[in-house]
Length: 355
Ligand code: AN7
Image (cartoon, rainbow, N blue to C red; front, side):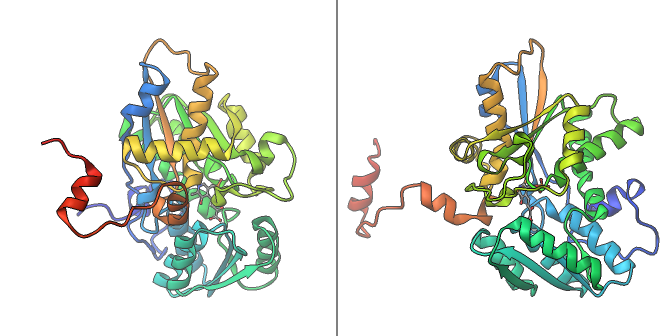
């Protein structure tokens, strides 16, 4: 009967039971897309795949965690949920809350979330408050309020979020028939790298895979606390989704990095925007800037000679959110269409077709 969402698909790996009301928008089952042009830029033995999480129902990977967090909140009798967000968490929380009948309260950093995400939170009926501060401050407020009032926190500090998000690692392995050699992923609050690492380990414990990938996390250079080993009090980057200076899952991101003999490194905004355009213009895949950090990071490592393989290897880049989330960014960096007269002659003069 087709795909019923990730809770039904991976039920035996998830903390749900027959009494859990499954709140789903049929999230998950996103494509793993081969990227021939980017593979060739690295070396002839690399097969690079794109886990296109922008094709989830609200356009980001957050739906994987939210189907679990909202279903469990309902099961546990919650009436309201709350999150701080750089945008995607709020969009997802708002949609799943609308579907479940829960009240949803969202704190966002003023002026720092992409247009599409704000539109989503608003249209799904969340109560959206913009604070005169950054994401890290918003998360501190949400932690304090949810600790003291009957409101369920649905940021990735909520363990059910990680449980849902780990299913992306299962899907990658199911698609490839094994674990990839490398898994590249943008890092913001560090919940997702934590979730993937948990997923790969659980699949190995269940003998679904025999090897674990090397985990490669990438932060934006202006907000790279894990790379710099220090909180960033005033994070800066055009990749607003990962503009986070004090990640909640900092420790578990380091564990994923160290246990997999991987690394967490920084990519500049210029590198992010180059990868953003490369994905759109050579592979036909439109992502939001933060998502391009995974590809930017792989290209940066390739230049330093990190991938020295003489035999075929698989690299999976996680593309966390859809490009339509942040249309302003695409429009700001690409030349706008020229206005011409509505005549065949005027069109032909511009496009210069050979007969
Ligand atoms: C597109 O929505 O933190 O390292 O509040 O939206 O698990 O935080 C978003 C994060 C990467 C980083 N890519 O993931 C939020 C929020 C996109 C994102 C990340 C986010 P984490």
